[in-house]
Length: 216
Image 1: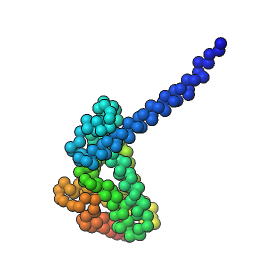
Image 2: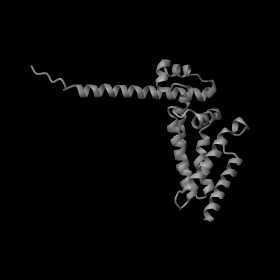
Image 3: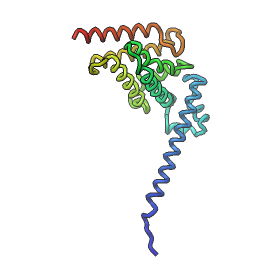
Image 4: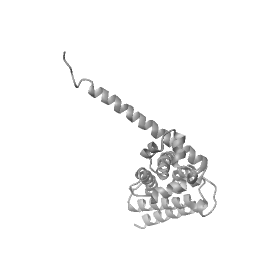
């Protein structure tokens, strides 16, 4: 009798690996959904990792293999929402000619994505910008920030190349957007709505970039 020791190893291993990966993806989706629901229902500060594990119907140790802190859970959830908001802003701004209005169209979905609670968006911005450098999911979030800044720089550059000035001006726009998001902790505003102050600041950034470009 002949025995082919390797004839089934590859396919069996592939199937086992596929099941493991599907299991991981399914748990990740359950954790993300549970965290999203709880943050929306209670606000970031009130939620605990144990609540997320219970809602996802997994052990707390399993949860920590995917996200070891509540901040990481927030980054998991908000990265998806942030990326979707940036994509939405890109689509909404395509047919807008005025640069100020086009920049506002780009960032409006980011502001809107904070509804119904600005608390979660403020916490996300804090973790994204000031969290540990090696925090999982932070790098992915910063990549989304970079994409938004690239889109803004494209608007500011107009028909010209995206140079250092356009990039610097785009970063200034994101900086004022960050302060707009943080505004609820220092002054009330309508959730999800750009303030007049933000509009004025973007107008100044655009005007300043135009003037600098015109003087070269």
